[in-house]
Amino acid sequence: MYKLLRSVLFWFPPEPVHYFSMNCFRFFCSIAPLKKILSTIFSPRGKQVTLYTRNGTLTFENPVGLGAGFDKNARYLRELDCMGFGSVEIGTVTPRPQDGNEKPRLFRLPADKALINRMGFNNDGAERITQRLKEWRETDGRRSKMIVGGNIGKNKVTPNEEAWKDYEICFEALFDYVDYFTVNVSSPNTPGLRALQDKDALKQILTNLQQKNSTRANPKPIFLKIAPDLSPGQVDDVIELALAIHLDGIVATNTTISRDNLVTAKEKVDAIGAGGLSGKPVQNVSTAIVKQIVEKTNGAVPVIASGGIFSGKDAAEKIAAGAVLIQVWTGFIYEGPGIIKRICKDL
Image (cartoon, rainbow, N blue to C red; front, side, top):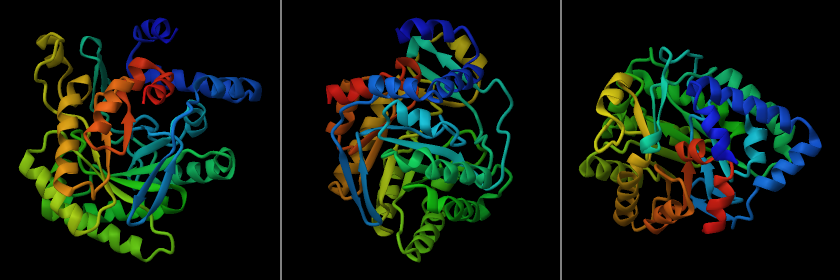
């Protein structure tokens, strides 16, 4: 059924149809009997996963999460909960609102089961997003067991030497309304952002957040999202830092700037231009990085795997590599809301 619907939706530009689809689902979920039916259809009977971290224990109803970038502004938490996600990562959130890059900025590569995006951290800013999270926690969220993570970043205009301040602002704003944080220094769509993956810059950001976290009565787990384009040596640097500062976990991986081995015609890919590539082309490199982290740390640093997950088989590959949880994004676009239930059933 979804494949038929997808064939219609794919006739339209990706970004507008994303909001159209989710707004339609929001309408259906606003009707209580329909919401109950939809929840019954989509919600999996997934095995709970308990994640033990230095800064707290999180219990996920199932291991399938939605990666950051889909619900940037925390507008669709009720609807995503209805679809059966064990967790949803909102954001990336920046201190101040920003429009992101010029449109069009999201592109499909169906032959490769991939997307290219150069969104540029478009979001409503920490203040407005925090208010939405608060409202959700006080209404639908009171009955929800879905884990909500806050993916945080810096504004485009903030120089890298002051980036740590932006991450702190977002951390303080969202703290009471999210279950964990993910520090995003790996998007390729904010100029200079990936330079923050260098060891010294990363240490400043993460150490400051850990210090702020330690002053809280109920500290929240802090994860780091890394790029698939890091060299093995750079990944080792991240691992060394993660162990040194007792980071709670790593999300592996973000999108890639590589365009290697694509089926889509080079002319079409070149015409799309810059942006992060996600989906099937990232699957193998993401799995390799998951495996490297797990082996180098002997499993001491939990890994959430993201990249090229379209099926239970793909999810099992990541878990076999050592991941404790998975996140879908591009696979969700191509496979539809039934992907959560199918993956949980297969696992």
